[in-house]
Image (tube, rainbow, N blue to C red; front, side):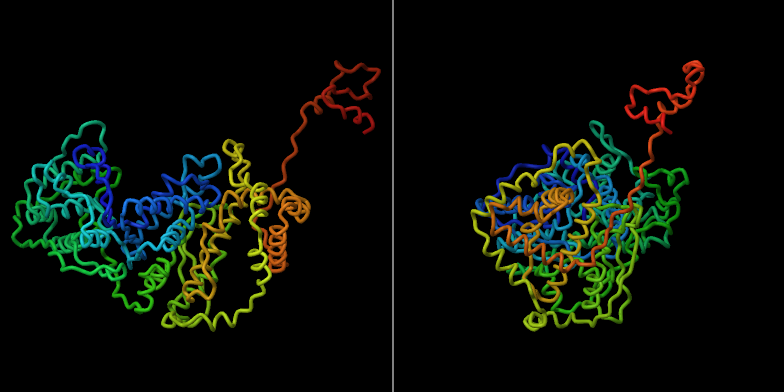
Length: 616
């Protein structure tokens, strides 16, 4: 559970709280979702506007783990699982932001706007599996499990003693209180607005935000408080009928910061140790002084926290705990495959919530959202996981012609097969007739020299045209939309293939998809009146490559015959510009034309066709 503003607070004072550490000869627990995004954002030189260059990203990931291997560091990667129902508001808010970024992204805004590609985490996981890196997927959020596993392995983690000492020896037991009051994904800081309205604000050096001032003020206040007294004073700001409710929610939030043995240790081959005693806070609510239960004036309540209005009534305070997680009745066969990262996190959302949170892509927002093309695949996945008697699957995705997140439902009648996930895929393979042997043989017979010759002809397509960086009209969003649909089909077919226990060999996105390359080739091919002749010209010096490409194109044409749907919106007719000069010529008055030749038309020296007007 992230604590808003705390990372910035520490980084701004890094000389006081942080110290350099040479990482070697140790174990290291890594937040998989976080590191996957950070590596792409800071180290991958990819063109986001084309949907992702996964080969470049895979190389960055491999480089990181190769460096760890050189330093004799054993990594353990922990991934987040499904979304918790109490975080739905946060999830939708993030989806809206990503949709907005995707709409703003183009070849011109490439360097100022960033959107993570669809196969980001899949590519990261595929590299881990290829390198035999130990990894596990938590059922839901992994933050607490990362801390627990790191303590079990005695990993080099940040020690808070230096941070506590700088504030006069702040009690370590008060840190969960600090985290809860600052707000996290489950408890908004505005829920404690009545407490913050009476907190003495501290001054900060430099131009610090209001959030940074609140953090410092809260830490200074906690210096002279125990965990029990701090909670007591927070509760004193609420009416008696609300204290029990608020206290229960504070305890539930604090519980997430306690460290115990993780249930995921066995998936990493780690032997558990005894549990660490959890921090418990016992407060006699009835003993809270009545004099401290003062009413807060409307003026105080009107003060907002960084633009967020404070609660005007205690009953309206939202702790986001109303929807507790349901009692999970998940088949063990599913849990085992899921925790071993053999199934994607969205399966937990489908199984528990019957919802699918689609990942926003760069697309044409005038058209239907790109994942709509995969609705039948998603419906099949839902029916296998939940059974045909269940309600329609609810998909959260972009609204047409907007930035908001809308819902749609899809249904496909299939029997529930979740308890048969371990069935051998051999029988499934026998029922699938494949006529692709010729293509596979042709691909395997491509010679190394022919590959080099083909690469020489195609290499320029791996880079974006420099002109596109300054001219947004050169960026064809319809082509990118089709590529987004293609990626959606690939992703969900991969999910279905994994669910069916791999009747087909799985693919790795970094081996088959480079968005820049595909976009450039598509634009190039669209200009050619005879595509077959053009391809033959490109690969004239690479006969084995030409044979393979020809077979693939032939198969695609056979499959797509009479099935191709144009998704591009109809083009508007351009209005012809009125020629003002011609009008002037036609309407010339007697002053410009003599009486003897009124019937003759004036000649326009700027228009070589003006003489033709004389015959009209």
